[in-house]
Image (cartoon, rainbow over all chains, first blue to last red; front, side):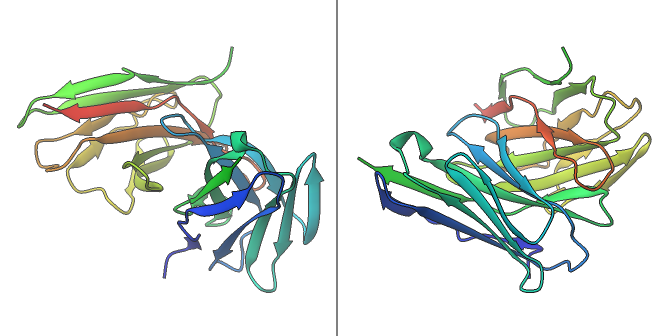
Amino acid sequence: QKEVEQNSGPLSVPEGAIASLNCTYSDRGSQSFFWYRQYSGKSPELIMFIYSNGDKEDGRFTAQLNKASQYVSLLIRDSQPSDSATYLCAVNTDAGNMLTFGGGTRLMVKP
Amino acid sequence: DGGITQSPKYLFRKEGQNVTLSCEQNLNHDAMYWYRQDPGQGLRLIYYSQIVNDFQKGDIAEGYSVSREKKESFPLTVTSAQKNPTAFYLCASSLRQMNTEAFFGQGTRLTVV
């Protein structure tokens, strides 16, 4: 079992809809969680991070963390075609000494 | 400006050649990572280093080698033993602390000709 798992997609949503991206992790000691967005041919850029159980909102983005169930989600409200990208989940593992990335979910927002 | 720099941006390799990809950071980060990304795929970890003069294999280390002689530098050599090296290579760095993100370089696109 991989340490951080994501559905590879593609996840296709219509413009204006809510896109929901999910990530599960295996290390119960993980304490910090990051969402990166990567456009094709570019390097990943950080869009959200979350450390505590519950929701964290930033503009159209909401990160949700449930440590008991070991999953973290990213919701994108009012999805735009410019949101079409691969979204990578990263988890701090090994007592914080390294980040482990999931394989990413490709999101396609159709006009 | 602080950041992480990869060079070159594009690299072409002939069959049987070794090539070295450069990664330099001036963020004073302890940890550095090399990832490989194939078209339409996610990141796969090649090697990582948490301190100078120490590094560990990731999931796909075969055919690659690294060194960490300086905190700022973590070069990756793609050897002739790597049979399918054409890919996008990303270097990243981070502090060795909880609640800190990783920063990425701009990537090197390697093509075998």
